Image: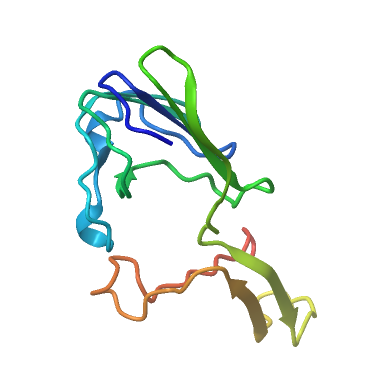
Length: 165
């Protein structure tokens, strides 16, 4: 590892299904204030997204330090089976200077192992509705906010029956 001249490029590759905006410059920024890191992320001249890859061009001198940055990415509907990210840093001559090819990804908010168990699976008598208590069980992969003040849709679970019920 060593310092890099302006014009260095960082390429972030996300797992299949994640998506970066085509112009991701406004979706990228310094996150040193949210961590214990001291160094501000260097100035960026461009950020170009292409599906699960973002290419970021650095416009200032990039010293060998600890950095934190954020980038906005669109999540897939489920956590990918192969859930690893990579970062490759090229110097301004396009030679690879540093790389990390196996960054563990994060789990998405999903419902797993959903089951429904009916107490009365009988048909309804014509003109009458057969009442049926149904036990719904599932596992969440992330927490569900308790109050809507913590999340606009927090504390809401919607169970929707198929047409005809």
